[in-house]
Length: 404
Image (tube, rainbow, N blue to C red; front, top):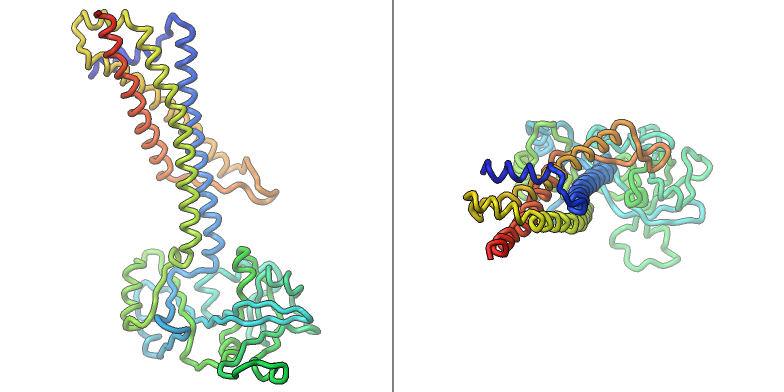
């Protein structure tokens, strides 16, 4: 193997007498460089966009969330709460009530979901850090915090005591609603908007936060009735183990979802886009590696006399084939690694110096991940191996033509 590698390095790094062959070799190397460079840049960009997109949901979604197995109400006893508090790995948990409501402000109405939260909610989630106007909930008066989208739809501001926001929810079992019994068909409460939050477009148009007592009173629910429990786990806790322990507390009558499962649709969309872009750039890289095939074949044709001499000196056809196979692998490896190094430097500069900005205050998000480096290297070496093997096979044909 040392003999083919030695000759391959000589052929790769020594200028040929034919200037055309030198140009073809340089073009092939640049193609591999550009392919590896662009593939890593795109993968790092998508990793950054993925983390950026999920970061908004992470402010809203807990590590684990427990729903009722059937229906909308999860009955929780004091004994079950005590057992949950004793599970090692659970840092905090918050009991919540969620239900569809109708918001009315002045002459405007809009459907939404009320989410009644207890005093631990701010320690489980980071939603209070998303407040863009006003403040988070207090117990001083009936208050709500609404999404930025709902605020625009209803034209609601914060702490407007002259015009209160009205929350209405249909009363079950009232039969057909008519204009005469319209007020009797709804439970309603008037509240002050204490804050406006902004997470993402979907959540901003959906949720209204209130204290859990207000939501319970509006929905006529009992003290031990909730819609869900949200959990924050310690950093070292195992999600699977904690889920099993929580399931044991509820004796199989609860549905437990992780943060990834709560964002299942978003994760699938991001994964599909990432795969689609990877396949496109892999196709581009494959086309670039055809230049390597062409470069090796041209080199074989140029070195026919050298091939004949090597054969006469005792080199076997397989050794001659390995010379050009090694040359192709060296070309793809060097081009790919150098392209990857330049891409890593560029991503590092973007992460530290914000070279590209989306807005004046928001740099384009990128992430440096070992996984992406390994993907690029595996792609380059796999495609390079295939291209080199195909091109090197031409050496035997050239050897036969030389001997005939």
